[in-house]
Amino acid sequence: MATISSIAERINQAAHGYEFGNLQEMRRRLKSKTRVPMTIFNTANKSVNDQQGWACHTGGREELQFNIGVETAGMLRFGVAFSLETSRSMHHIELFYPKIERFNEYLRLHAAEFEDMRMWIERKEKLIAAPAGVRSIIDSEAVRGNFIFMGKAAPIDTAGVEQICAVFDRLFPLYCFVEGGENDAELEATLTGDAPFHFEERLSVGREQAKRSPKVGLATVELRSNQIKKRLCEQLRATTPGARLGDEIASGNGGRIDLVALLPTGRYVYYEIKPAGLARDAIRQALPQLLEYCYRQGSVEAERLVIVSQAVLDAASAAFLVVLRDKGLPVFYLHVPLD
Image (cartoon, rainbow, N blue to C red; front, side, top):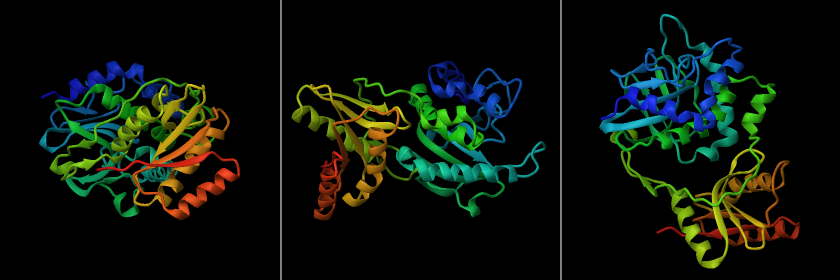
């Protein structure tokens, strides 16, 4: 089985190809430091602990830390965490309170970006809050001794460095918001996303199911977004000849579009996938994102904006979309049933 040190070293080597590879430079600027470590994880430092099976980024002890760790049943966690433990150099946890407030604020605004991730809480290596969807941290959980984790888990022998780095990259803006200053222009660019819209024909549909260990799930977690995306792509290939498909495309104004179809006419169609029990809920979640992707400064306007869900479209929701289209907003709904 791979050691934490060896995994940390492989992440260090791969990090230069990802935005989060700039973590230490971002820390230097946000914390007004004159010097920072050169790597994400320093395997010679006590922040990498092979014996206990965990590692956090160098300098992350008093921060929202990028964290990897061995869970039970040979599972590796990777994501971000608050470690609310005191130490000789840190006698209280009050410094985490404003960070947790900012963490909660970011999740209120961007929860949809982390639908495929989980949160759980441990205390003295015992699970006290079972893995569940990403949510705000409540006051009774922000207490000394708790370890609050958000991210993913995979079998340690098969967890790829690219998979880990991709998750870290998605969490990097959250880290910057939690640790950064509110009026920092460079931080604003990091959070809102200054990457221009650039269509690339590619698909990275993940697994439709993910096995979790007893400590990290108790059951198979149905990744409905991946199921819907896979079936959506199959449907588009059958019904829209000549369309080129790309997923997770930078919108040009922050966030990533779930799926973009480039039509033979040269126009785009944007698809936002929202698993939901009711079409109304899927529309409420997806509509603001699609409007921003299409019309906010930096965007490229699409011919159609499509909300995709496994929920059946009801008559009232269908009538609501007709009203929007009558007002000039090209918003549509696509029902993709799941087995």
